[in-house]
Image: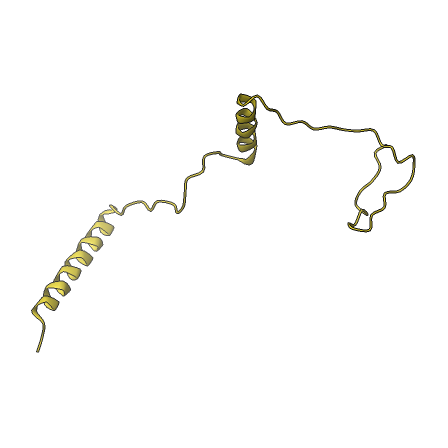
Length: 90
């Protein structure tokens, strides 16, 4: 025994498929949206600039400090990390 609702569903799906095919022939396919959240910043540099601007608004700032080399010619030594890539500034 055949379910009458089944035939209606089949007809509806066929009609939708025909509409999709007709739209594709006419070039009316919808442009796919990219996945995920859209980017707020174009690059990492712009992101960093915005971050620093937010800090400045709060009255804070990023500080980089360069200190004098106090090793007096002795090589760097560490039992924890590899320092082979570190060189002394001239």
